Length: 432
Image (cartoon, rainbow, N blue to C red):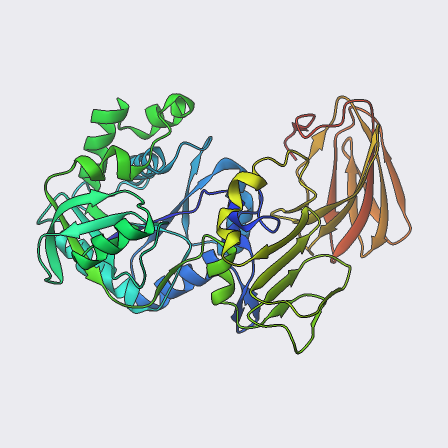
């Protein structure tokens, strides 16, 4: 059995903590032995504690480095050159398993999103699904619904047995229709599938016109932006569903996200005793005081502030998509950066590198930079020359100069970018 975790989303529903680079699966919200862990770390830990199956994570190119930072070595990563929804992502990962990892076509795959909040029995069901993969083309996990949700698709099984054939699928309904599906024995579609590796590649060849890793990778931007549900599942006749009745939450909105928080406040926050069913997450340097809040979520980061009724927070995504501005906070493989000030011809950033890490060696065609070291020590490489730096040192980087910063200890620097055309596209990478 091979497990594929899908980790490519941008998480607009959890704005302002999530963005294109730091998606919701990287937000450290759950208590762990050594502080807090993110969704992807929690799910990966649970899989390792429950199963012995190898894991491959499918992610977007922009998230590859931060994902590696969170999961470490020992996990394969299949990288999408650009976002193209779940079907192309699954096809590309399946081709990667066959062509790069040399996995047998008869190997069962279990494909799962990276963001469910579940108990360990959820993952033990993967073994049952993998065993059933040889008896039908597709095996789905059906989640026992707890309310008539409008956010999920529904699977209508043929029988009430634990394993059943499938009558049909229903897309996200209104609440009244959802209740009718539940009354008829309908199950939530949790987005978990099992099948043989060969099945995905056959569907890829049939629907995408290619099934080799090299072909899919080369033509990825031209592939249709379509989900596995729409492209494959809804058209498959030889299909089974296995019931899962354990705890399950889809942490896709602030409403569900706060349900699994073990504290009402994270960060520099004070809530008075009159607050009820309210949560505050503060990632800024400014304190937040909350008085008399009821059923409210507050989230603050350098990218913005959200204040929402918990139920209404489910409708955040289209509003967040209307915000078009440079990302002001992001995690990188080497640390973090935070935008401090934006001027007409300048950009000021606070850069934090963790010990032993470094930026990529790069240059800019349209801007010069000045770095001021404010804590820690390290080295600067400027056009091949190495210089040791410590607190108080200032480094000037001319336009076109190749440069990088290497942290020997945890290091912080203020970076001032100056020029008429400051953009993320103005970056040329060089070999170290």
